Length: 282
Image 1 (spheres, rainbow, N blue to C red):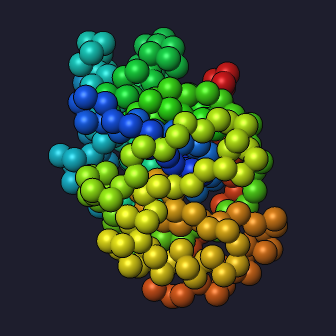
Image 2 (spheres, one colour):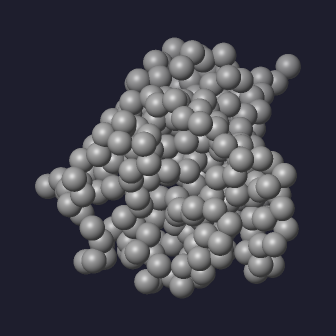
């Protein structure tokens, strides 16, 4: 019988994002808060004994040569000299280039799935270190808890957050993270913030003014949703979000969203559902 794992790869929101400095290698030093939402890509991993890593038919618009799932599987297979292979399929739901971490989440779910399918026995800490080589946001998905993050986003401290209903708007453009972080006007000298201060309401997204200037579609989405609730951009954008007290309230606002945008109503999650499905303790 074929060994198959079907797992979600959830999106994330950055509830705030400060830049406190820059390393000598050019990476920005961040303070941010990650929280998962139940908007997820759906992934399927089928073990094979041929050693081939391949992508089955799916709806990913990314070319196979750029596929983070294939890259992640190849890194793991090569590093641990795995003779088995895997066939991967994806049902893509998370917008690309929207600041929701879809690629990073895909990579993390791939690491967790193959650790089990290939019986590698690697710890979450080890998988997170491998994930950091793939992308700065991968470790939080591997660790599996909503987190306060510092460093380049890899120093994680679990944080217990309220779990509201979010309305997320995708203005249907891709924002270049590299362009935003290269902008001269980006604030890079924020004073360090404490978790306690964040929980009391402090913290902004310093990328938002830059994205507003360069991407008027994002500015329009922020202004529109801001009529109904305090609104913030996730990461470097393009998606924007607001918290609501009830599903009915969020769905009511969703009905008013302009037709040229896409909107999702999603529940906040403090635990990555992949860990729950695989029985991992976090």
